[in-house]
Structures are given as C-alpha cells and as structure tokens.
Image: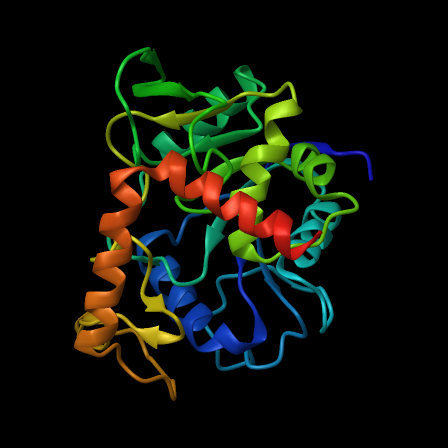
Length: 273
C-alpha cells in the first residue's frame, strides 16, 4: 500500500483484553474527545468489543486468531494508510486531558527528523543533546541504548520502518522490544524521545500500565470508580507477593539494563537456535 501523509492512532490490544480496551475507550472519550486522527483498535477477532463499548474507535482491525503479537502489529501497519502511526497500549488508561497542540508538534518533529520512532515521554532519558521545536524538548535515543525499540511509552512510529523491521519475523511483545532493539541497529532511521514532560498522563503507579501478568494493579478498581469508567472484568487483583516480585525485578533491571538486554538476547537466540 502506498502510504499517505498524516497520523493515525492505533491501540494495540487482543481479544482477552477487551475488558481493558473498553476502559481505555472510555478514558479517551473523557480526556481526548477531540482527537483528530483516525482511530484503530487492533485485536484478533473483535469479539468482546460490542455495541455497548465506548465508541471512540473508528475501525476495529481483526488480525485473526493464532498469530503472534508481531504478526498482528505488522498486519495493522499494512492496513493503516498513513505513514505515521501513534501506537498506544490498551492498559495505559488516560487520567488527564491531552494537549492536542503538543501532540501535533510531536508529529511534526517525527516527520522533520524522519524518525523511525518518536517516544512521547522522557522515560529513561539520560540527559544531554537536547533540541527544541514547537515548545517541546527532545533528544536522540542512541543505538547502543537498551530497549531503544519499545512500545512503552506511547510513540509516533513510521509504519514503513515497522514493516521493514518485522517482515519475515514473528515474535512476542517481549521479544519485539528485546530483539527489535538489536535488529534496528542496522537500519538507518533514528529514534527520538521527549526529554521533559510527557504528552500523556496515565493511571500508572508502577510504570507498566494497569495490568500486570493478567492481574489488575492495586488501585485500578478505585481509579475506574472515581473516574466513572465501567470496569467489567473477571480479573483478580495483584497480591502483595505479585507487587513485591515486580518491584524486585524492576530494581534488578535498573541496576544494569544494558546487561539485562544482552542476557535476554542470548536466551532468545538459544531458544531459536
């Protein structure tokens, strides 16, 4: 497909997370009701997002069952007609109004830099090398940085870059970030991130969304009730053991993320040898 200029929004989800996608839709209708982009919801079959669901999305992309996470993402990128796509995850639930002027400025910067990815958060910002444009401060993510390719935080992606990165490869969401970072080192396009304030605010006390290993993060039920978001789910809440385990893993990662990435890459290669 020949790509058009412009930006689309893609919420990456799956059939088993339609309960959470509905909450995202409700949060977007509350905090970004004037979103000017065509909005896509990616899932396998669309089952579970019925007529009673928030009508935020314009199109439900049905990738089909039995495909890997990256197969579904690749399908979406080929279906969406615009060159650039704002990629968001279903369990990052909006908690404050979105400044559309900042989002537009970020999109223009992504185009100006011919960026493969423009991350809309200063997450893992290491300082130095700042540039300014449209009221936003941003910097390049260097090729040797761990998790340079990542779906967290939200970002503007060049859909042609994603197609080149994933064509002929089929991986999970976790291996996409780990291996994608390595695969992208041989590609010419650059990756950028905001270096100060993020574009979006989320219910996100752990930094990894409202769901962890299929369980609801502590406080999410209360958040939905206070915001007026209907949460219809059979999911259990995280236990204190789940939270402790998650905190320990996060601490280990922050000690040396580059080493962790190298170990994960080695394990991936051993599994696929």
